[in-house]
Image 1 (cartoon, rainbow, N blue to C red):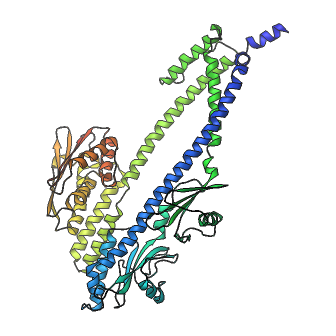
Image 2: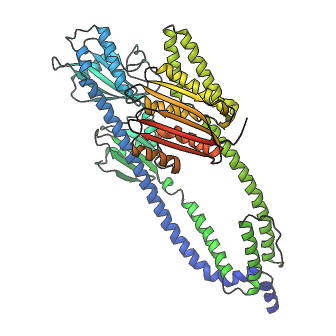
Image 3: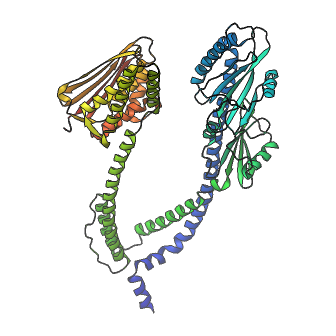
Length: 586
């Protein structure tokens, strides 16, 4: 019996290791694992709840800002002297002129807040004006009785509609509106109503935040009424939150209520006394528990194996094949996959050696597949990056074409349509990433033709191309985004008419692109911020996206063989110089 037991352990490393260390390691590992699991789940739940409270506080700030701005716009309209002059009872301006004047002012105010759906004014004098081009409803939801009631109120009144605007025949979708009385400056009495509306879609975007897979965020007014028509007010979650908020004292600080299956978060908006309510299911707070448990078990298993591998109790006989495998694994780490390994044992060590060799061969195959997939992913990302088209540019161009057509300027319409066609045809380039300098110049020339027709009084331009570089191959969409940046951030805001220079020159080792303007320029701080964005992605902002896009495309497609230099001085202008190596000829 003794020899039989000895033979079992002599030919099985697993049996020996199990005998040596199972009893010594099992109990401590289970105790430590249980403690780590308990503490980790509690900590992660606390962190998830803290993250949810921070999200609710952020949403509350954004929503409070929106509601405050809506009230501010109503006050701004009420205090607008030009609107007062044409809408008061003793105004001399005809009604049609008063309406046009009022609508011009409302549109000017609305342009600064694109999240506001519309501004509507109605006065006792008969003036009805709106900031949008939608026609008025045949059956307005704001009745004459409500109109008269609002005029007599000294406070703002809020409305929720799930059938579109209260007064305009606009697109489908609900709105949240605030109504306030207008005062006749000549008499000091109310003489009308101003209505400011925000689409429920806008509110939903603000409330659509991640506080758990089944979490919900919604808006309540000071009377504990649901103020977001896109939320199902009859759902169990909403009804429970409404019942709890009705009996809970909600102060200036965020209030957290434990409601058995969920955590309820309430944040009162400081300017309006409205409430942002959030429901966080407790299942979300504990959803990582199983993953933590699996990780602990995996770590415990690895710790168990590592302790066995390094144990001083193993004799040299046991360590020798392990060292051979370590050497082999190091070779795999250095990239030498599939090399043969000597198998000298007919036990678990030998089986492990065979499987390691098989694994290394498999890893080598997977590494090659991953590399190919990464190359395909990079190409797909560039396609997506190049496919971005500014919808505002297309909308404004088509709008300009429509106005030229109405004015009978047919030749200008033809020129602009031809320029737009050339712009998109060159931009698509049959899906190519690399085009010739001539094609790139043709693309930016068509863009400048369109912008020149739209902003003729704001800038002139000069475009020079060295004929010797027209056949050189370069990454496409280099010039147009930079020219667009120059127009919108350097020239359009400038008080004087500006000049834009675009030069494409031959350099010693490739092609040199220059974009220069004498617009507003940049401060040293803003220039440094932009350079940091290009070099290290710090402080990335929306207005530098086009330049970052160009920089990334050039860097990737030229394999770093390029230079990108920005010079600017506030009040003087901006210069961008790009040098690309002659890495391909078409």
